[in-house]
Image 1 (cartoon, helix red, strand yellow):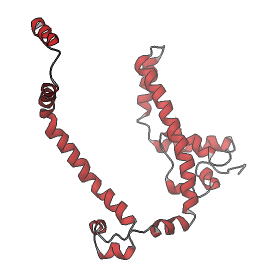
Image 2 (cartoon, helix red, strand yellow; image 1 turned 180 degrees about the vertical axis):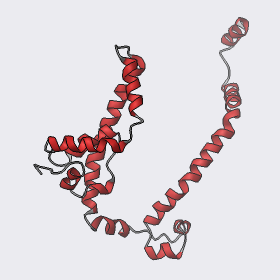
Image 3 (cartoon, helix red, strand yellow; image 1 turned 30 degrees about the horizontal axis):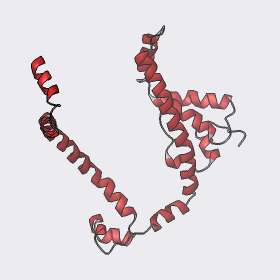
Image 4 (cartoon, helix red, strand yellow; image 1 turned 120 degrees about the horizontal axis):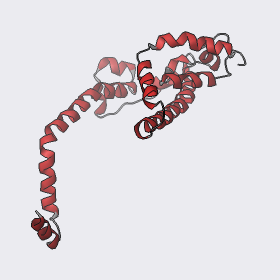
Length: 199
């Protein structure tokens, strides 16, 4: 073994062609798995791609032909569908409220989760195992059981103004607010507590 390593070192190492063949030999056993996963992902993406393409088509064209016909010439795409949706029933405002709530909440949840994961994985501190056990045990508590306590907590604090109340509640649940749940800040806040004061 040492002799072979010395000979390899004296010869300047393996050639790129032999290194490529070695890499191919190592990857060959997993190639069917990789191809199957890629194929499944592509198959799974077809409905999403179909909906995306159809959203840029006229309703009459959607009813007359399949979505795959839209990728053939002549192309006839339009954004009128999005304009109609955003203009009716305050959907544009609801979408904007969802964005200003979801983006900070998502960043905050990822940041806190990363710090907590690092602490549990690499740090040793008193009560670490017990705290981890409590966190895992709380995963079995249904989400709906916490809504009433949160509602009462918000009522006792008289609620906070605007969307900050929802932004403060959603990180605890580790999820974002549904896009259509917040047509206005007052409605957003009223989703969690009643009455909402200071709006």
